[in-house]
Length: 202
Image 1 (cartoon, rainbow, N blue to C red):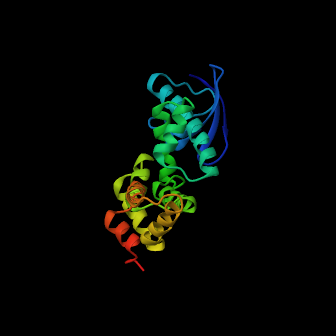
Image 2: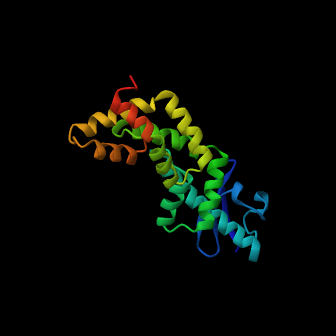
Image 3: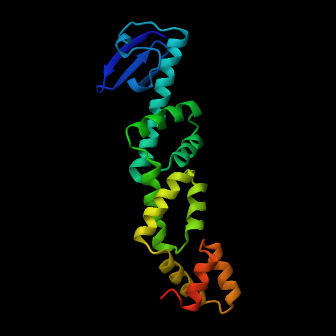
């Protein structure tokens, strides 16, 4: 690869065009072998150095798409990696981009978990077990989920959520066993459910 031109877009990002006809952006963060200052007009790169520059360009492209998703809402690393994979970005490029976004704190599983729990509460009444399972499904590790759930239930009484769900289910179902099964499926413990049904939680 021979660099035909270089344009410094910011302190960390440059646009380069090569003799192969490609023009792309790279971020210094993604360069593992090549030093940014060694990239200039008519500079030539071969083999590993050329691949390093290409990898940096692919990572920046993945980063740009990831930022689009993050501008709309908080994302989990797992979910964002899946979305980028569906857009045919290579796994290596995705991992490099997400490492950078986490390093800059633009991507945070902790923030995603908090935002998701608060959003979920609007239309659902669910207990810790169900919410923990839903977070795990979204790629949130157990410790992050535990801390997020602890914070969530400090602000939202689990037993009050259980009551709300109980009253909602009871409107359309008179079978106590069915009600209990549904509440358990919604993540509430059997002991909490019995308290709510018996009125001991008041």
